[in-house]
Length: 87
Image (tube, rainbow, N blue to C red; front, side, top):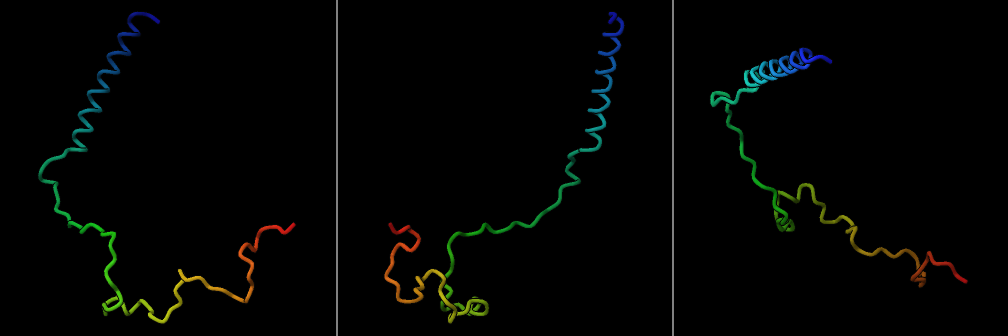
């Protein structure tokens, strides 16, 4: 490539960078007139309220439901390792 071609490419790159910078500032202008107020949300707490006596929660918590965390034993098998192979 000749010296003139390098100079032409450099000028084109600089001019296109200036034009794109001006266009980006015009499109993404962060003026104070465009600021909007948004609602602030309360942070979510990791603590659960006591729901046994709260009437708000009694509508969708069934006090007579089965507790899935309790051990349920079906039958009278005494085998404590049912999936191990027997020799």
